Length: 219
Ligand code: SAH
Image (cartoon, rainbow, N blue to C red; front, side, top):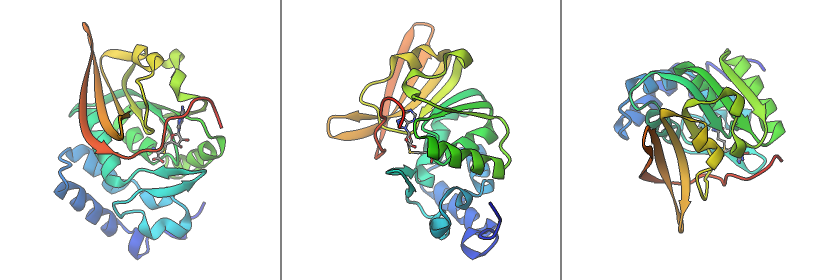
């Protein structure tokens, strides 16, 4: 990859700062998350033809029927994942192009990320190398089974809509940890926060969202 489409107009630092301003006005209050989103060059994660739209508040196609979440969704999910605290070990399901992985990589000690579509994982590895994220371990596999050898995780973030919370992931969540996922409930999807306490699990339903489905197996 090259920097051929960076540094020009629509992909400049100034454009990124405008995105951060917009996120703030949309209610994102975690300044730590906003600072990181102001730094990571989102346009490098999308196809060159779409680079000029990378900072708009829209999701964009990644190929293979998948989409990169909008900046607002990434900011919202990351803020919920942090809950105002420093992040230790995080598991992400649905690496996609690796943009959310890069944001987490800047905020957490270690990130583990699983993607079921091998060609997307190849793209994500290249993108993460380009933005010099070195604390993310990527795996091709089914995120529904998690990564037992690296568990427990302080946070788990799922980038595709589930119909139920995967049991293996509940087990791999540390006590005191939280899982953020879009849940398909009846005809809509809601962002859910699941917290593991010494007594068990609690679930809080938040904003209505729109994600691609969490699918079993590998593609
Ligand atoms: N966070 C990503 C969003 C990608 S869209 C980004 O910033 O680009 C959701 C991704 O979840 C897709 O790439 C899809 O292939 C992946 N996915 C769906 N079900 C999965 C599963 N069971 N395990 C791993 N990845 C899965």
